[in-house]
Every structure is written in C-alpha cells, then in structure tokens.
Image (tube, rainbow, N blue to C red; front, side, top):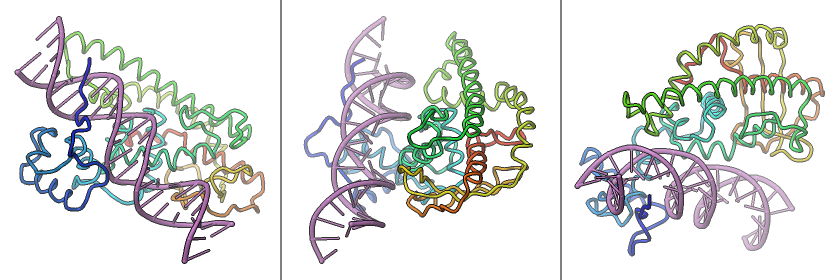
Length: 297
DNA sequence: AAACGGTTCAACCGCACTTTG
DNA sequence: ACAAAGTGCGGTTGAACCGTT
C-alpha cells in the first residue's frame, strides 16, 4: 500500500535539534489539551514549525513526564540483555518491560554498550550464540559449552513461544479476538506466553539443568576483567562477578559499565579468567533462578 | 591549544501496519 | 474492497562531546 510521507520535506518546517522554547510549546499544548487529537494537526494547532512525526518523537522519547532519565542500572541492563535474547530487536517490546525507558534509549544502549560487551564475552549479540573461533574473543571450551547450552535453552523456549503465538494468532484471526492480531498486541501476547504455560513448562523442564550446574557454580569466583573495546589482546568490557549458588543474579555486578576504556588487570591468572568468564556468561544467559520470570511482567 | 578520532544519543527516514472514510 | 491518513517501529545519521596525541 502506497503511503505519502507524513512530513514530506514541507517547506518551512524546521528540522534538527529542538530548542527549549519549542519543548515548552509542545509540553504546554499537550498539558492544556490533555493529550492530542492527531499528531499531524498538533504542530499547526500548537504553533510549531515542526511535522507531527517530529513532535510525537520528541514527546515520546524526551518530554513525556514519566520518562526516567539518567544511566541504566545494572539490573536494567541485565533485563535488556535477557529480553533481547527472547525478543530480538523488538525495542518497543523491550522498552515496555522497563518503565520510564524508551525504545530509542534502549536501542542506543544496546548499540553502544551491550552489543560490544556481549561480543567481548564471546557471544554473538544478534543470535546470543557463542562466537565460534571468535577473532574478538577466543572463548574457552567451558565458556562455549555453557553459552551454547543456555543459548539453546533460550532459543528452544523462544521457538516454542513463537510457534504457540503463531497458532494462537491464527485462532484469533478466525474472528475471536481480532485485536490481538495487531502489532502491539502481538508482542505483548508474546510476553504473556512467556509468563504462562510455555514459560512454565520450559522453566520446569530446566530445573534439573540448574541442579547440574550448581556444582559448577558453587565455587566462589571473582573476576576483574577490564579493558578497552575488544582489542587484539582481548581486553574487554569491565565485568566483576562475585557469586555463590543462591540467587546469583543478585550478586552480579558490572563495574564501570559506562565505559570499556578502563585498565586491564593482567595479574589475573588464566584460570581465574576462565572460571569467572564462565560465571559471567552463565549470569548473562541464565534464566533467573526459582522460576522467577517476573522480569517479563 | 589545536587537531584528530572515537563515542554517544537525539533526531530523522522510510517501511509496515492499523484505522478511517 | 479500496485508498488515503495516521501511527509505530527499527535502522541510520550527524552534531556534540570527550579523550588522546
């Protein structure tokens, strides 16, 4: 279906960064009118020389009062990684699970921080698979096996959910719940599935795996592996992990997550590195313990 | 102090989908 | 049923910023 662009280079329309005056006009207009009728007509009514699309973007990504600004917490970053493993580049769906964060913000976080960090850890950021014979970071055998195993768990759960989604969507399309065929409902429903039977069965099925892994993670390990963005010496993003078996997620801490450009501790023995990388990988790729899928709610 | 290169992030672009008449 | 309008979304861009030389 053909579609004319919303603001097709209309003459006189301003582009580029918003001024504080424009922000004020937009905020005041939306406050005064309790939202808006249509974005397209908004700039005209508000007296802005912007296209409606630009106004919408400015409002949803920046001016909305419920936006949480400031750096992402380590918990939020973990959540983004976990959700990305399930949802892929569905930024809006991911954002819907992080109150106060926008899809744009999450996309930027992913592209500028998290993607690099995963690469550094030997994980393909798109597939969440370990990077085979990575030139970025030659991961150890044990890294590889943990990563592969957990990737497989996520992947099989994801496929199962998608199959279920596809099946149920076709049911809805038969006339029962048409609204669920929409894009947004689609992704929301995807998440709901994770919280329901499929997620449940997957989580239950995984239990024994957890127990198997317990022995492996029981040891206390710590790591300080830091460096710049994956140079040839494998000096990668800063990760610091101190963990025991119970609720490993709570003990996971990324230091200096804002930047990879910090010193690399060469004093770490290779064993330390390997053990702690395993743990870090596990933390990144693991489903939360105790069947806690609350991060999807 | 200036030049340079890398990083970040707000904003834009274009496509796809839904809604409306 | 169809076409146009409206909206949402993901990818990309480029100016500003920051650290290094």
